Image (cartoon, rainbow, N blue to C red; front, side, top):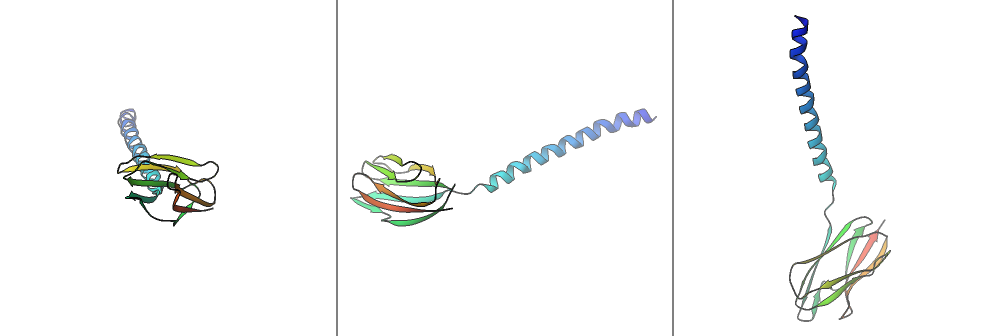
Length: 127
């Protein structure tokens, strides 16, 4: 009789433990997703020879993702004078362009348009 009870309980116990493991895995994935920070977004508009923003300070922490969203009516090159190396992005005459990078070192770094030599923003990267 004991052997029959054990034979019935073992599969039930395995099923319960298996479901518990799945539930644990799912919640771990949700926790990781919720820990991710949204990128720091800088919206840039280039229209009729004017640039917006114009020399704005943007606060960023080391390790944060920076996203430059650009709408432009002219072709240009966007430079981010960052460390350890400069970032360069080709801007097309188009809307909805997105360029991303990670702020790797503390300091102040200019974001400028190459052709017009216009300061768009200054990234103030804090430790």
